[in-house]
Amino acid sequence: MAGWIKKRIKLQEFMGLMKDQVSLGRAMAKAGQFSQIDLAVLRATGHEEHIVEEETVKAVLEVGGGSRMRVSHCIRFIMDRLNKTHSWIVALKCLLLIHKCLHEGGFMFQDQLSIHPSTGGHNYLNLSKFRDTSSAFTWATSAWVRWYARFIEQWIQTSRSMGTFLDLKKEDKSLHRERLMSLASSQLVKEMINLEELLHEGAGWEAEDFVMEHVLVKKAIGLITKTTGKAYRELKSQFEEVTERISTLVRPEALALLDVCERLSEDSMSLLQLFETGESICNDGASGHIVYTYFELQKLKETLRHASLHNLSASPQHTYLEQGHSQMWKSARWERIAISNLGIRDTRKGFSFSEFDFN
Image (tube, rainbow, N blue to C red):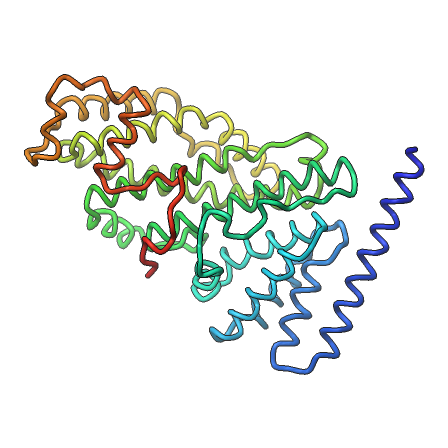
């Protein structure tokens, strides 16, 4: 039985390589201004179980960039390949390429990925039903690939909500500080809720050991660590801004942020393990120190709890808070009340991307 399985796997690998050769041949034979883009994408998303060289990825960004039309075709071709494949290897390589495009491709790649498809929704990459049924291993890796797609989808959602993309480019600290100071408290709270949603999704990175040991999965974890680390640093900067204006927060805002702290507490261990794993893979510096300690989170919770009990708004919509409901923040019902009073739709229950402007 084991021998039969090995023969089947080898046959599938051979068929995958044959498909790659046929696809490359068709792309070479196809005359047109975008044929080089198709070839570059196919070379970066083949069926081979090894990491794609950086030069191959850079070739996609180079030939696929330069104009909005070329970027649009590049993204559409990657998406078509992602949605048509039944191979977890091709699907994962497509997701890795999308991740690289978002990190390093610049504004046009980010913009095109944010509006594709135009209908939006949580199933942004259309992988919720993806399955590679070739073997028990491919079945397990398919589940991890679906999670990785959800992580990228949440990343895009969070960036759209913020109006700026969470990539790895270095920001001017003074300009970043000015941006945070210019935000109204309600907008700041909304961004923090969305950032926490991205971190919460990132906390689900683990899978079976035999999946985590695969070289392609390790490559993905390295990229996920960088994105999650950027989100965590941004959230910490926003908490610093919030604590400076704590006396101006209305009670629903304080309660919504208290919920953010609670969820961060639940995910702290998983996020710390992610950063430590990513550090061992990338060897590019420690990230674990950015995670709030237990005592730091407790201090934040006490500050926000105090604000939720004492910061009263004079506006009519908040007067009901004075009527003996000081402990209602503990219930799920109170969480929904707090978020609705901020005009925020909970991303865990779904929203349309069209509600937000992307500048």
